[in-house]
Length: 252
Image 1 (cartoon, rainbow, N blue to C red):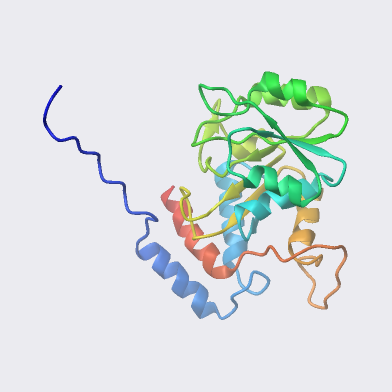
Image 2: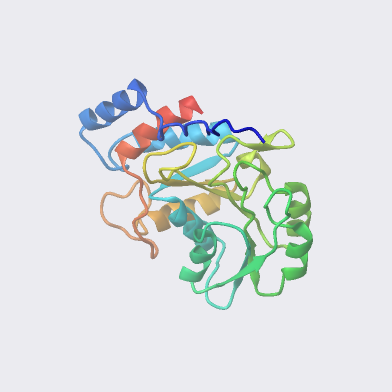
């Protein structure tokens, strides 16, 4: 063995940013409307992100955990239901289901990719299963062909946890091009970050509108008179975060 010292490359400083983020923050500051219902940064970021990932609709939210919760709510997940999650993932994948009163059912992962094993998923589906949550781990896509077939055969929808999959693709298709719902995170360690933040993409217009209501205290996007149409919470992203994320997306 060599007696020479071993060294490891320096880990890059993270997050990465430059004058584009600075300009975005000043732009958001100067517009004088710092919440999404009054400004334009969040709306612009949603359009740009959806276009980049091949999704018809995108909804920016406060963080990735809330993105998962919102997606599960739209699919009717609640007490007495189950959500299939990988046994190897960040805790938010299971906690999002548990916070809604559902049972998170862990399934083994493929040891080559650390993503959900389709055979295990198929065996775990029951009459109580309301969603299957494939987590694209560290940029590696789950086998969306196999999981898509299971979803089609069982009628159980997929929710992609794409917290590690900004810009990633499977068989030449990015996250939004696989249809259904996908949840992203913009937490400090992610490829795109604003410190915190999240986003959900949708292929179905009705699901998108339901999610918008629920993420804005039950208020539709045109409401200025506090006409709450359903129960919800405040998961709205602010204009400053969106301005940073627009610059981050351009660098992706």
